[in-house]
Length: 405
Image 1 (cartoon, rainbow, N blue to C red):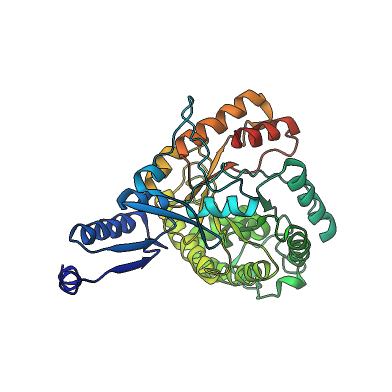
Image 2 (cartoon, helix red, strand yellow; image 1 turned 120 degrees about the vertical axis):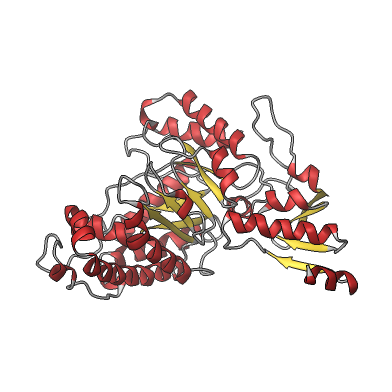
């Protein structure tokens, strides 16, 4: 209140630059309540904000900037209430003409008007034995063949096991983990593929590199079935091992961003089927946040992939990322519910589990429903996780075309 009185008495105007950045939904709501109260007291406010939905909800007038120029200006009510078609799907919002792929994805991440939501899809290629050239080639072929808006690069090269070991099941085993230079491991092959993809897509599209968090990297690559026992019986040794792995993953994440990746697709299995909530709080969340803070500002498209069905979603929504990917059709929440819980750009809509087994018509309806739930901004059409490799091309093109209707 003291600040408000001071501003009024001095006839001051306020410029706010992205006040919601990095805050949990609860604090975002509080910040916007304060902004509204300042405005009601007669203080003029210029708000620069990527969360377009919330900004338009309290503003009188809005301006949409694209690459430094105003491409749309109208009352906030008009900008926030675009007309819908008969199926309830938002029509394309006028943006000054068709967008290219980079503009479209950036608009989605900014919560700004789009000509249509970006579309992406991914699956495992089974090329973890192959050289970087082949890994880059198959990703670029996928991108070109399906005319994707955003490319997610799979990362199936292995985190190296200490020499002479097949599994790490004891504290002594975990003690053998050490820092490394990613280029000197199989992950170096992935980094060389990233360099080639970056050259090929320069000026054409954004792409993200997949990174599994420290807990999942350790489980998938090193400790395997020993993880439950290590968490319960040797938590200190496991914690120390996870820190070594996380530090190596931070080095890798910075390396991939330096080589041209637009962001990381950060896979976090924060779900009851993987570990308890208490184990998540101890072994996963602190290191996840540490890694994401280490790359904050180094990429423009960091995506949190909340992997699993019984998600601890309430403890993921404050992760410092640009978008949230999850399976809205397997475990939820629905897109409509997620929209009420976070200001992040949402990335969902397509059933990855049943994808190969349903008709193109069913897939088109999934995309239409997703677009209707998501609204006209802040949304990317995507599967909840990787679709099966044997998914037929007509199904993928059906999903893509429905995203562009």
